[in-house]
Amino acid sequence: MTSGRSEAPDLAARLTNVDLNLIPQLVALLQERGVSRAAQRLGLSQPAMSHSLARLRALLGDDLLVRVGRGYALTPRGTALLAPAQAILNEIAHGVLHSVGFRPEVNSRHFTMAMSTSTAMVVAPVLLELSARDTPHATFEIVEYATPGTDPFDQVTVDVAIVADIVALPYRRRNLYLDRWVAVVWTGNTTVSDELTIDNLSRLPHVAYRSPAIRTQPYVVMAAAGVEPRFDLVSTDFLLIPQLIVGTQRIAVVQERLAGLLAKPLGLRILDLPVPVPPLGIDIVSNPRLETDAATVWLIETLIGRLGPINPTNSQHAEDLLD
Image 1 (cartoon, rainbow, N blue to C red):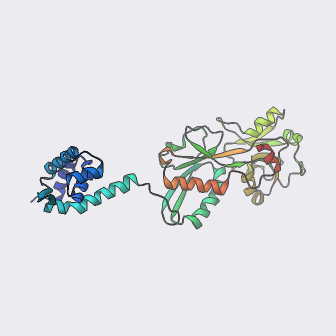
Image 2: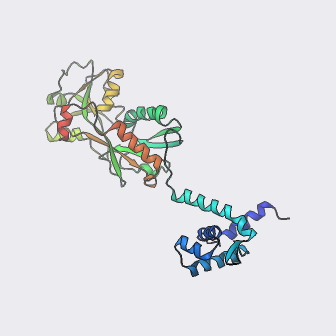
Image 3: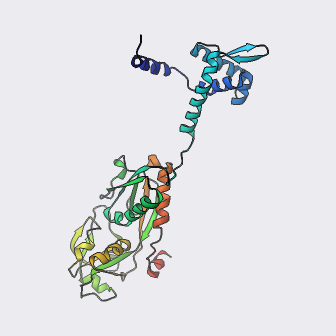
């Protein structure tokens, strides 16, 4: 007696020689019980359908259809095949051709997102809100994207990357939100009044972001305006910068949303820059293999709706920059 284990490889090997294009023809023949009607249903010629029937008979070792009077009737094997063949065809059509939607209130999904720590400070509260209210069965994972210029999708599990608009990536991207550049000083800083001046920018020591791949726009604008700031300390982590001025007379230039989140817990004052600086664009990029994935599309659209594109705390000064 042959065991099921030994039969399975034999069946798999036999299936490699089966033309799966015959399945729709088989279903049509069994349901229509006639070559002409089956051919008409599938838009094939009668000779082509007759050829398919001959191939099916040879493959299955059964006539499937036999002439009875002026019509055709199914053989017992044909009758037995009708339901499973239809089920197989439906499964293929649903799994391959049907675009499965994402229902956030019902479906589960694990989203892995790459971004800097400073961007995570802005995005994470929205993700937590989505998890609590909109998509209770989804989970979110943030992995650090700390080196501009590298490919965040080198990590194959990353679904979405959130990067600054000045970071070059060879993928389609959409603007997630805009963020204004502002200055922050410690509340105990006695050298700065309620209005920041160009002289303050020149005289105060700076704690600043530094990257070998990109230059932050505020310092490009300052250089063009003849401002030559003195850098006491540089960091590749924007999240660290506001913390390093606490208890000092130093100044830092950071994104307004980040400053707004840290001002109260760190004891910082937020000041407008005395030179007009274009806002920072933060873009969202999907892994190219997921561009049409319903869940990923939902996540991107939802984040754009919740976060952007314009910072709700932007003043008229920022609106002027965008005109």
